[in-house]
Image (cartoon, rainbow, N blue to C red; front, side, top):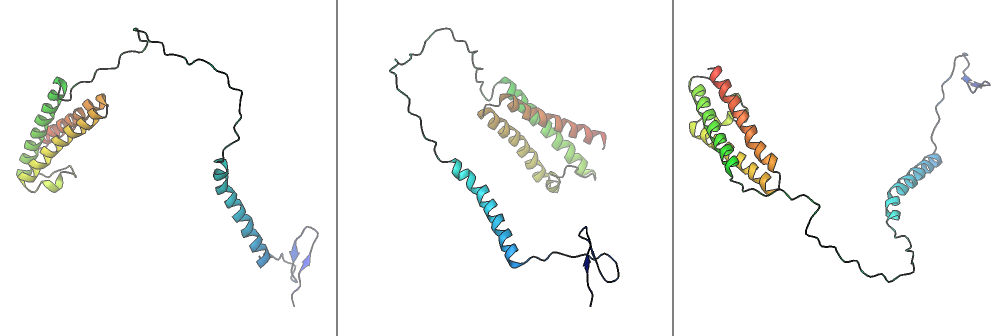
Length: 185
């Protein structure tokens, strides 16, 4: 029978003199107690916001009758004037949208020419439409209409600088696609 002896610094040694590792066993009572502690901590964590919602007692102060303050109306306002709303199809937007349409049609023409000469579409979003001329034309027309729609949404939501930035970004990407397609024929 193996025996274990306990030394001064809580180290156990077996019959052979080697250190003996002992593992604490969890009894049913200590496990239940540990689970109870965990549940109390979790309940306290979740109940704290509910307890914080209770109304604090209101202090009642003596009321004094004070005449209501009347607003001061002056003709000179200290606030700067709000920027004037521009129409959606003003001169700048018409120029931007016509430029978007021109670069989109140029991109369509260069892409169609490259595909007809054995090239392949590099844009993964347009690649499914490169099988037929009609599908490719509908894709580029839809791209132009999408830019106008995004610009209109930004105009209606009051983001007038972004309204002009959407077509400019599309013009830049179409110009890059046209120049890349023409240089890699």
